[in-house]
Image 1 (tube, rainbow, N blue to C red):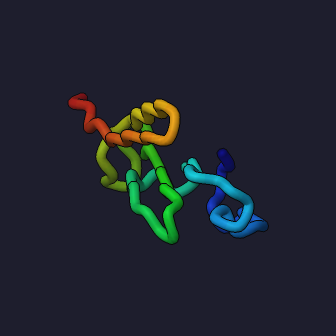
Image 2: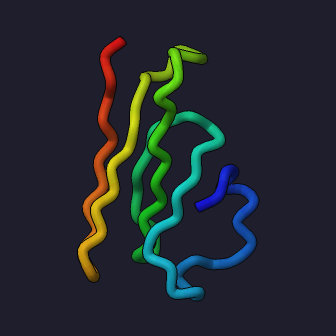
Image 3: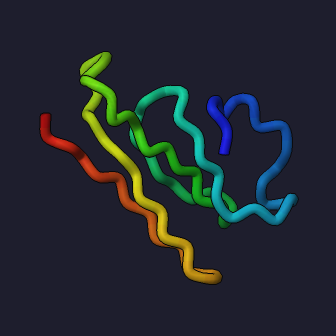
Length: 74
């Protein structure tokens, strides 16, 4: 977990990581690259920059990972 994805100073797949969580942009996003889930839950703060208000849910059960971005109504 880190604030800015740009500050990541290693290759997650080479380091054996399966998930990278970041949030600086407040833009909700989840995508898998080279077997690594990159997850940004967005922001649950009051609406900023016309972005949706969201939270993220990660469920890790052994090798299985489930991710979901949940949009909140305000």
